[in-house]
Image 1: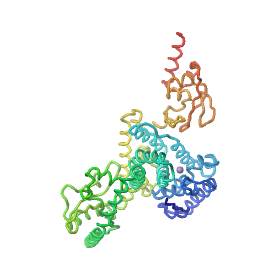
Image 2 (image 1 turned 135 degrees about the vertical axis):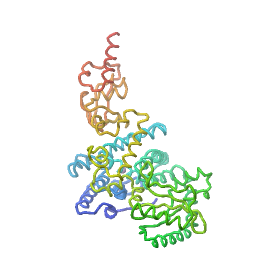
Image 3 (image 1 turned 180 degrees about the horizontal axis):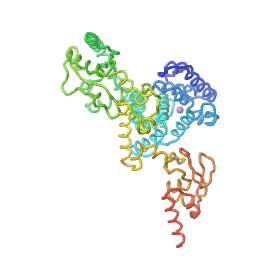
Image 4 (image 1 turned 45 degrees about the horizontal axis):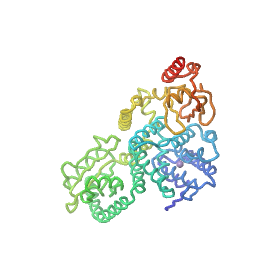
Amino acid sequence: MGKNPITIEDVLKNLKVKRTAQREALIRSAYEFAEAAHRGQKRKSGEDYIQHALHTALNIVKMGMGSKTTSAGLLHDVPEDTAVSLEEIEKKFGHEIAFMVDGVTKLGKIKLRGTKEEMYLENLRKMFLAMASDIRVVLIKLADRLHNMETLSALPEDKRKRIALETLEVYAPIANRLGIGEMKGNLEDLAFKHLDRKNYDYVRRVQEEQYEQRKKYLDKAVEELKKELTKEDIKVIDVFGRSKHLYRLFQKLKRHDMDINKIYDLVGIRIIVPDISDCYETLGVVHKKYRPLVGRIKDYISLPKPNGYQSIHTTVFGPEGKILEIQIRTKKMDDEAEFGIAAHWIYSEQQKTLRNLIFGKKNTRIPQDELSWVKQLREWQNELGKDNVEFMEGLKIEFFKNHIFAFTPMGDVIDLPEDATPIDFAYKVHSEIGNRAIGAKADGKMVSLDYKIRNGQVIEIIISRERKNPSRDWLRFVRTSLAKSQIKKSLKKDSFV
Ligand code: MN
């Protein structure tokens, strides 16, 4: 098992935002706080628990996130797994960080159940809820899951399989939705390894062989291209051969009768240039040097993929007439392909959240390059909306303003209007739960039946074993028409008995 202990210095070293004294101080203090809280705890792998927090934080900075998200990442398991409470975190680090930690904790409580398809949609939806309150919570959760996947071998087989499947069905698609290609590929490959070891090993071997065979060839092509581009005065930032993620390659192989010779883009060349006009100029230079294959030129710059991906792809007859795929893009496009939504934190001048971007004031001008994200989220919303009408209105802040989401102890999400009570919650779960309600707990504490539920609380309804009738009094405080009609129905039925 590859243990890879890291320190807080490794996290700081990888910061993509400017490393200011203030940011560094915040991250260090979050680290010290988390380290003290987790001290003595071990992971199943035998490592100190703080290693998990550090690796999660490292994954977060690699996505380009700032000091607050990184600090929340360091602290993400503190309230759940140590004696230190969320209140203490809030006192020391403020509301914003505590809010993120709380969001990650809540997300962790959501149980993934049901059949594959149900699970997929259901949980996209649930993750979406968390995202709607703060996208950074989802990014921390992905970073957390990536490290859990990297250390999965320490767990027993059935647990490994369940977590790997969940990763493949839920987390990887979300990373894809957010355009974080690197995260998606890593999650898929790790899941693939645990779910289908035989094919994983096979694909890895094939890929290595192919890469070995083609490496010299690629080096030669890179050399030739560099020379041509310099001649044309195009400033190339980087040219490199690349290898595909294994799971994606496996999917491709399956579509091509497992015949590796039918896959042209197993290894290819990626050319990174300063700006968009350079991309098209480079394409011209490439085609002048190597004859293109007809119908294989894809311009995702003028027509980005739904998840915002931008690049030019072309397949050419390279040196010795061999087929070669070449991708051309700017540095910014490359970062976005890798880090997706997170890259916007690197590039956006004002450090605004996605929420502001989408829900911001009507007159706020949205920069052109950020529109693809908005478009993508709309598409996501449409997909979710297919079987849930309420989500059709989803991406409006007004919608979320008037709604709260509470969880059952089993992790199911119940959406309610603002000021809804445990009775509203109970009827939403099941009419019999409503009829038999005699008490309620919110986040484990007893509350009255007319208590106003707050967003994200876990609500437990205490029911009577005997048949019990709803109280007429409840009609005074319930908020949902569902609860009202059920209470009336039940009282009416009773009066006829
Ligand atoms: Mn964790």
